[in-house]
Amino acid sequence: MSLQKRSKIAIFGGSGFMGSWLTDLIKADHDVVSFDIQKKFSDYDPKRTAKILNFRKELLKGSKQYKGDVRNLKQVQQFLNKEKPEIIVFLASIPFANFEDKILQFSVEATGVANLLKANEKLNARIVYMSSLFAIGHFDHATTETTALEPRTHYGIGKAASEHLIKSASNNYGIIRTTSVYGAGDFNNRVPQIVIENALTGKGHLRINKAALLDFIYIKDLVQGIKAVMFHDGNGVFNISGGRAMTLVDFANAVEASLGKKLKYEIHAVDDRGRRGSLVNDKARLVLGWEPKFDLASGVKDTIAIYKEKIKI
Image 1 (cartoon, one colour):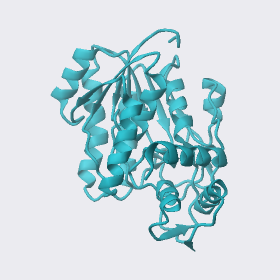
Image 2 (cartoon, rainbow, N blue to C red; image 1 turned 135 degrees about the horizontal axis):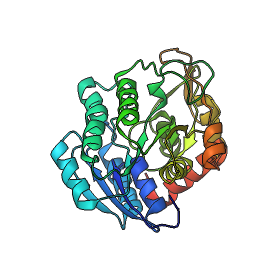
Image 3 (spheres, helix red, strand yellow; image 1 turned 180 degrees about the vertical axis):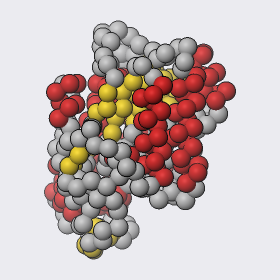
Image 4 (spheres, rainbow, N blue to C red; image 1 turned 45 degrees about the vertical axis):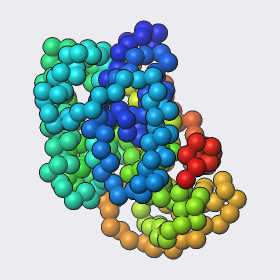
């Protein structure tokens, strides 16, 4: 599929953190429509939420947005039948490892993807699905796209099940695995977001787990990777990642260097999460010609600059 062709692209979960950045990236060259439940699942501060939503509105400007639930087959069918996209990007998710309503979380992934596949039978648009390292489960140090899926959480089970559904029912797909995304515009209470906002506001008490290894990727790099998978000819699974596991202490150090001040936080070491490390991204580099442009220092610096200029928490 040529990058020169103007395509209609439907993004499920399009008004969220990833979806708004992806829309901003592609909207000048393609027609973008989104389908989203437009609901906040975290307990993020309402005043800050309003500022984040205003920032996302700027990113989404120029796209057409629909409100709907991916678990409702009729709504999904009506949306696709009306818009007839050539590419569908499925980002709809409840991205929390310990979300209380596990059945709801699983159904958004598995039922949502099953509905998408059913509704797409005649249209046969290309499907790009956002999976996660949680579909893999435990792994030590590094993993590639060939690692067996052995998820340990309901979130991961939903991702793994959806990967299998797509592989079995679609003849034109791309699956992305990523992890530890950071950048301005998020309100899902990911730890990098909490660290940056604490540094900017001086509010809150930070406890940083130095035991966990995280493969950080900046949102601008991630959406470039999604775009590369969207326009790739052929099926496949791709790790779109920073490619190097680091610690939250490393992340805090990058924030300190960017702001030129020390942060106040406690360090503890608790092995309370699945073992993980680097998502090796060699396949994406070789097959897609994609690679991250931001290292941790430059990504954090850019994030903080956007917070100061656009969000002003």
